[in-house]
Length: 215
Image 1: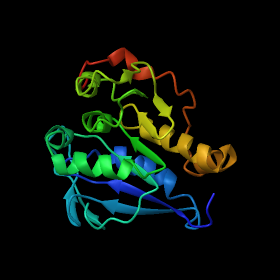
Image 2 (image 1 turned 120 degrees about the horizontal axis):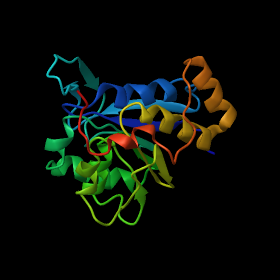
Image 3 (image 1 turned 135 degrees about the vertical axis):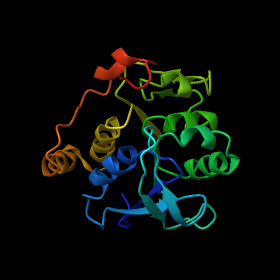
Image 4 (image 1 turned 30 degrees about the vertical axis):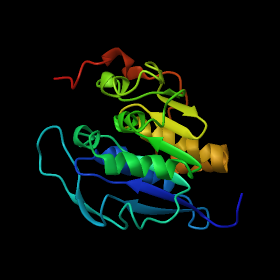
């Protein structure tokens, strides 16, 4: 591995899901800066509001860079959320993902973020998963993907996708283990007092497949 730290680009868009983004980032930012640095990227630099399915007022976050001036990204983290729907028709987003995934070491998604990767063609010929309650949202974006309904997350080399919301934390720890070793990932999980779900092939929420949000 290079002596230069890896750069992770966390992709923001209006209506992204909070835990999709900040659960994994809690894990990634526990790495020392000589190993990993994180930048926030959106279509344009500046404020981006998170989203909520309940309609509650959500906080705003600041993107460091826009698509046009973002630095080289070794890792990409793409959240899901209610904002996924309009982003599926945003060619600037899809084009950015295609361009940057081509040079990234790992492109990862949480929840319905895999629908955006599928729409961009980045999952063609690969195994992938998504949020179980809204699984069809991702699956309908491409019939060229080997969709894994029961998986908690799927590591298909240069692309890693995870199930809904909290599953992104498990995925992030798995990526950290892959890049920096199991011991490093385990220490991060312990430091966060997080019970790491290590079985990538089994998601306990598969029983809610395409059920939508439970009452």
